[in-house]
Image (cartoon, rainbow over all chains, first blue to last red; front, side, top):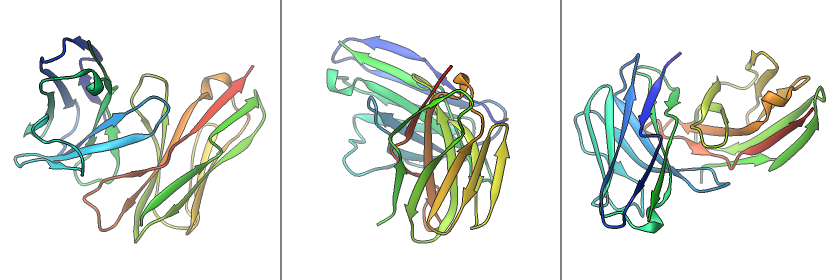
Length: 115
Length: 111
């Protein structure tokens, strides 16, 4: 099956610092990747859609200058949370769309805690 | 407005007790309906994609069905390891492959 690797699985950072989360499709190419945020006991909230080689499309209410997304290759997208604050603490999940298919496969998620 | 509603919010079953989870949807042109399983602290795991009314797919103790307005995830003789949150999502034919998610059903199977 299609495997998406997300790293790190958890991170603790100080308020004001930046954190980078990587999302890699290991055995397939993904022209489109998605970044989600999930609060406890809630469903996934789409933050942005990332297409390889172009700028990400952010959902309404998501600050593009705070959540920097780079999709430089068909197998790697990164999310950088800049100047993190405690309210940015959350579970961040990426997914990759299998090229030519409709199914999206998910990474294992990153638990971010900002102290 | 495109929308997905899952019921019940939570379901507790005894091991071996079969049941169904519901996913009702409204979407302007369905490209696909997806079922995922999510364990605590993990990303969703893909289970099924359904594309048209009448379609059914099976995997081990799970069977997913689709009508024009809803989908059911039937679980037969569940085991404790089937405990998880089951998420339903739809993809509109007009979308850039984004998924519209339901809130999920938390399934607990007691031994």
